[in-house]
Length: 113
Image 1 (cartoon, one colour):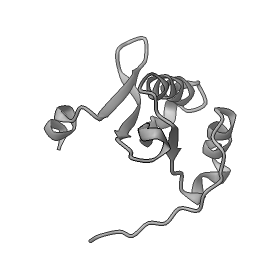
Image 2: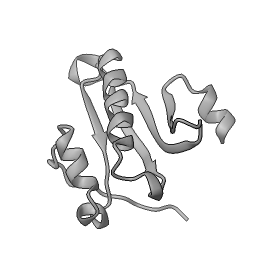
Image 3: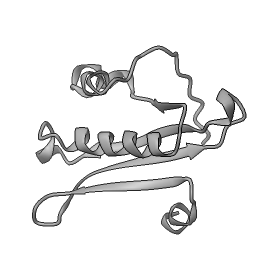
Image 4: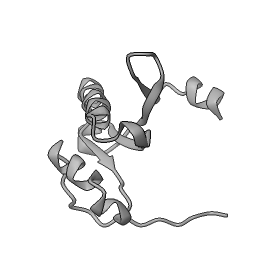
């Protein structure tokens, strides 16, 4: 799967490292070509994860600011991010709102097993 991700021109995985070069956070940006919105692409953010020992240090904010800048540079019309309802109380939803994300849509999932 890692080789497939690396081969995709529309998927970028970001890794945040501490001063010692140890990975402490990740996020993934996928850019989907679109026929609507004047044919501007839509960006999707997934897999925003920060090591527990490094949470609330600004790692996720730095990652997301970088992803948003790259989405702007790709002329994306919008950026979508799903966050599970269980994260409402752990600060994740406040983080996303602070970066300008608005909880304006209802999300649906269908897990294929």
